[in-house]
Length: 209
Image 1 (cartoon, helix red, strand yellow):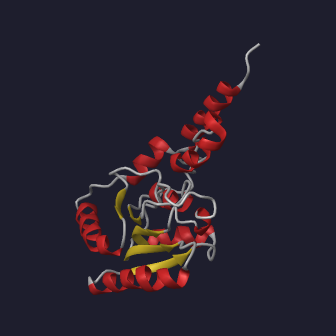
Image 2: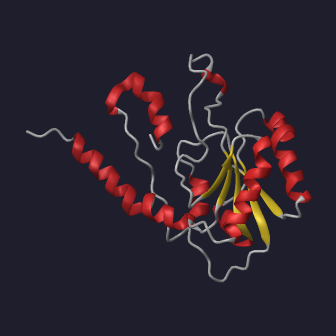
Image 3: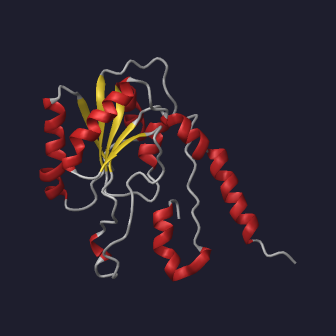
């Protein structure tokens, strides 16, 4: 699996054969553009998977309202409704990413943004929210929308009530130059790093004569 929390779901059934091996991010392709002059505060990335109407009313719409009230500008992009070049162009216009998704096994989109130098403010409820978890008998499983993340990358908020405080911290630290998301990606999820991890696992699995 690509991230630890997803690996943990399968390990009770399949044992130690389950390992974590993320896919590498093309850091040369998703790179900061020194010519870009961002004019917009946030790129709001909408990847709500379930209960769209409810999440629109209880999370997305209030977040948009809060940004407008704070005098912050944003544009929005929705998962599945754009081309990669559209995403890259939007990142050149925006200073940061506001990532709204229940959870990710890896999270290529937010990692591509970090590789391009955008710090991330992420909704991270901390639980696996697939509606079928109840029929599978796993109602409470820890999960993350940003499974690869450290203080260099940005901030997280668990729910709407926590959003204003997280937003304030995020803006303060971003303006102070505290974030270095690309450094994290290069050190952790570059193609060479992930290829090395894959080869380590492959070599470990080879049965020696």
